[in-house]
Length: 451
Image (cartoon, rainbow, N blue to C red; front, side):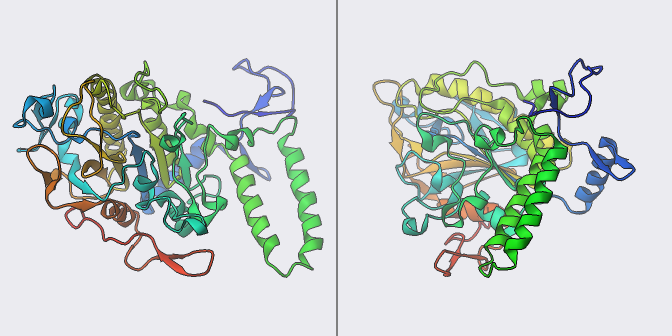
């Protein structure tokens, strides 16, 4: 997609791309006095800066609906047919580790990932809240709830670049809205919430009938008026408004965010490698299999976003479970493997964490509709990047996939690991709630086997 700012700007002549500058401008050109910075200059400067100070970032891929653990990362080949199901296990490039046959590309990348087969602490609730924060919505509800990892990182680390939001949510709105929730800001408030490109955020970036010159003139006028009011302001509110307004203007007058969202600027071969996830099947009230969102996530991280959350598919397979896994799993295999290889090729994999999981697992026994029902006793998680120890499986379930028999890993341990990868020490870091009381990010430590 391409974001355009509508309004008059300069001549109405048509240019070589046959687009009139009068009809729209694409934000991002920078000029300081008589010196103009070209795109190549900017990218060269950014490249130098990123090599010396890489962006520790996170891509969260939420599989809304509860993916079937025993049909993905924990195949039960010795279980009876009414539990085992239709899939066979295939070997990976790590000796002794097998995964479902619908993931042949990921099987060849097992040395770059880790699987947790014993995730516990899940609640039987169709929502992303716990996977994105480690908590349930009821916790500290009177104060606004616990913040998601994206909002906490936005609060603790701020923006890497003033023109780029630190936290972006890509999930398109679904009928069951909890599946498209990209992470709540909780008691941290709207200032630390995710920027959503498909929501009001993009619409608010369209300057209908306003040129950049006029925008700057209006900013100067507001600044002069604010100076008069600031003299009598003793609450600090004006200072906060100044910072918020400056951030909005920084984003508005830069092309970074817009360019990151525009896949027409990407190498067509890379776009094809990720795929588009179409046709969208088994979507119902959930999210589509947007393969392209994983590519956009990589582009956003390159632009300076710290945390990107997205929802992939609708995994609530009470019926036709195996048909759904073939469809969703095959598409996930394509785009997730492409993401891992893409990040590695760009030298970013050790700095960018990837987590793939859902709100709970599925029942061991297959129901009469060839589906699996809710099963909160145990589930799985797939992790890659971020400098973790890869090429391993952590934990195990019993022969029927009912419960954890080896190394149960609490949901919050996974979240704590992601914080660790981002350079945040969960044992010492707190954020003050609205009452002024310091709140720890989670109550558990990182998974020691991964760090």
